[in-house]
Image (cartoon, rainbow, N blue to C red; front, side, top):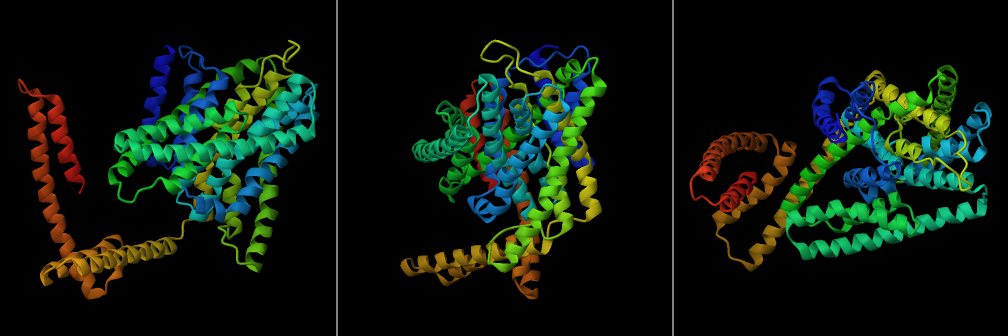
Length: 528
C-alpha cells in the first residue's frame, strides 16, 4: 500500500464513520482514530510520510473555519468569562502542572522541554468536542462553551509551545520577551484576520457567482493562517477572526444559492478533513511503538502520570471556576451561558479530549538544537504526548455518550421550542409588514391580498405549527396534507422531466453543457 492508497482509505473511512457512529451512538472522530490504530498495526500499511510542520497549516484552517460557521460573535461575547477561564487560564495551569510533574519524573528532562510538553497536551481539541457534543444532544450553553474553549485554547497553547521550544533550542529564555511575543502575536493575528475578512467580503460582492464565492471561502482560511504566521502572528487566531468577520458581515439574507451551496460544501470538507486528521492520529501509533521499544513499563508510567495530571487539573479547575461564575452570574445581570448543575460540570470535564493540534505540535518538536546536538528527550516527549492523546480521545470519547446518558444531561427542548416559536412569529410579522408596505404603493385585489396574507401566516406556522389556535391549526394541517400531496405529485413530474433531460446526454449530437444547464435549472426549481 502506498501513501495515495492510504489517503484514500482514510477518506473512505471518514465517510463511512459518520453513519456507523450515528448507528452505535459513537463519535465519528473516535472511530477514525480507532481505524488509524488498526491500520497502524498492519505490516503492509506504510508510515505516514508528511512533514510535521505541514500538519497544522493543512488541517487546522478548514477545521477551524467550519467550526466557526456554526457559531456567532454573540456566543463568544456571551461566554467570554467561561471561555477565558478555560482557553487561557486553564491552559496556563495545565501547562505548568504537566511541566512540573514531567520535569520531576522524567530523568534529565529540561524544564523548558517539560513546558513544551505541557503546552502541547494542554488544549482540548475543538473538532472532537464539537463532534461529540453535537451528536449527544447536549444543552446549547455547554456546546457553546466547549466550542469557544476549543477554538481559542489552541491560540494560547501554540504560543506557549513556540516560546518553550525556542528556549530549549537557543538555550535562553526571557519572560518579558515571551509575554511581549504573546501580545504581538495576538495583535498581528487580529489585524490580519480583520483585514483579510474585509477584503474577502468585498471580493465576494465582485464575484457574484455562488460557485466562485464558495471556492473563495476555502482559500480564505489558508490565506489567513499563512499570512499571519509569516508576520509572526497566531495563524489560529487569524483564521478565527476572519471567519467571525465573514459570518457577521458577509451574509446576504437573499443569497439563497450561495448559502445552500456553502452549507453543503463545508459539511463535506468538515467530514473529510476531520476524518483524515483523526485517522492520522491513530496511524502515528507507529512512532510511539518504536519509541517505547524495550522501555514500555517506564514510559507507560510517565504517560499515565501526565494523563492523570491533565484530567485531574481540568476537574480541579472546573469545579471552583463554575461555582464562582454562578455566584457572579447570580449577583449581576451577566448574559452568560454557564453550566447550571454539577452534572453539566462533570460532562464538561470529561469532554476535554486532545486531538489534532496536540499531534501536530508533538511531531513538530525539532530533532536538533541550534548547536547541532539532539533535542533533549524528544522521543520521551512524543511518546508521552501520544499517550495523553490516545487516553483522552479514545477513553473519554468512547465513554462520554454513556456518561451523558447516565447523568441525564440533555438539551432543554422547551427552551429551544420557545425560541423557534419566537423566530416564527418574527418571520411572519416581517412578511406581513412588507405586504402592507407593498399594498401602499401597489394596487392589489382583495382576493390577491387575502391570499398573500394567508401565505405570510403560513411562513410562521410552517416553522412552528403551534402558532395558530386549534381551529387554525386543524385548517393548516388539512392544507399541509393537501400541499404535501401536490408536492409529491410535482416531485414525480419533476423527476420524469429530469430523467428525460438526462437521457439526452447519451443521444447523438447532444451538447452535454446545454443538458447540464437545463438540468441545473430543473434542480433549482425542485428546491423551491
